[in-house]
Length: 239
Image (tube, rainbow, N blue to C red; front, side, top):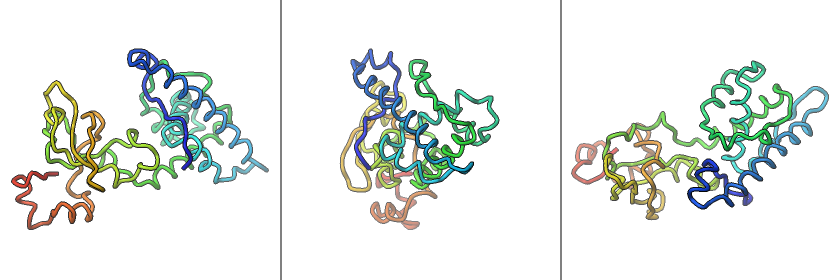
């Protein structure tokens, strides 16, 4: 995928507090460009009362999944009353948490709702093809110690080239963030895929990967089997 302006997911107030206003402005500009590109793509691919599929991929490649999903969900959230959008898409859009400073009329796509709904369907299909882990694959981390746990990184914290289920898996080894009631939030560990060491914030994880979803390659790498499952606690590896 091509390089694109990183999507700034936080509010303008947060950007001011963190001295990141320039990042917010760059992201805001790209958001406006993305909304216009979606509108143009829909117009260019609607001919003879028929919507031609295949116009989503170039938009995602240019702007990234996070920005495209944000723009689409924002439009759905702003049009919850419009039943020309499917119920499943309206629910998907309404689940987005969008700060007031990120609610901008410039992000609205001026396309017929039926056509925009078809675009959303195609964009969501592309997202589903990533086969990422989500909350349904995880146990909650609230009140749980994380050291020695296989954690799932939220996809929004990974750039598109690393939005893979393999890159989501992280072994926590230390850090105050491993303890639920500690003041520190840093969780140290390594990516199970390639053993690269890294530090995340406790809030960057969706949860602890449920045992039934642990891939075979992970079990093999960590020597997890039915024979060793009972001794995981002693080995410092748990799920």
